[in-house]
Image 1 (cartoon, rainbow, N blue to C red):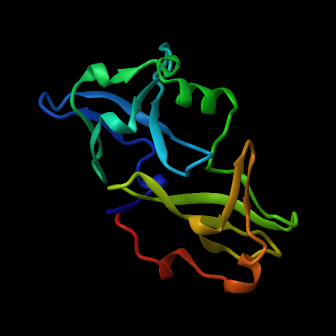
Image 2 (image 1 turned 30 degrees about the horizontal axis):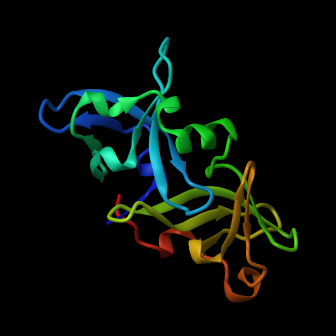
Length: 171
């Protein structure tokens, strides 16, 4: 199933058996090397942030993230790879999208996750006054860095501007 990040942010993290809400998705942690979802970050007032590893997720859908039990929600420091991504402040949403030759494409407004593989498959790029909105495949990503995602130069030639209503994604 495909789901957008915007449909997950703010949704509850729920235990499977007790149906207890143990947190809410605050951010989706994506590996800059593989483009896979590594974890879901949960923040609550007056508490340290916690994460649930993608490996501990039973299901992801429009109702939220389902985990086996509350013990799957742990401190980020307990997962080395996730902790490094957080420390480097590598995010996907609201970062600049540019080409290899440094041409601006816009800002990453949203992204699509294939829930069976936890792979990011598409990026919604919000243009600006002189930049059209685009939907770019993850196949065109060269590198994910702090504050920007670099795409192949060919995305400018291949793609025509599109609107989000032209693409259907599970809500």
